[in-house]
Image (tube, rainbow, N blue to C red; front, side, top):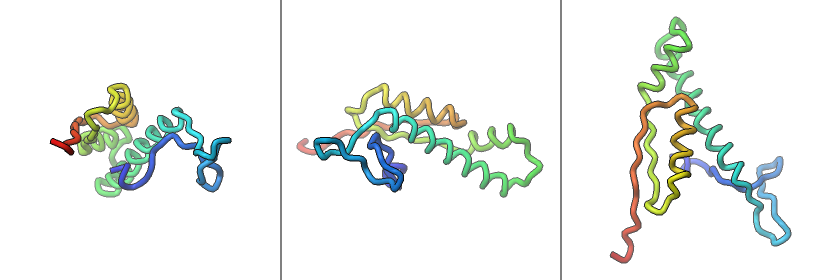
Length: 115
């Protein structure tokens, strides 16, 4: 869903979130930015789910119990194209795990045009 709701890419942006262009007129890219943005995205999702669950279950729940409940109730489904690099898929799953999620699935998509 994050590709549908917003971009997580490696394009360098300025303070107004506009792409910074290089000498060739094309947006500058840094692989590090994509990894950082993915990490922040999963952290925000986990924090949002934690706040929502805290309101639902009440303030008496400990932080550890809350984290466990969020992890138990959330399933991360990663849909990757058949040509996706394994390291990219692994990296995304690892970053979601570090954010606190524990239930994950991988689904591959195939380009069926021309068949």
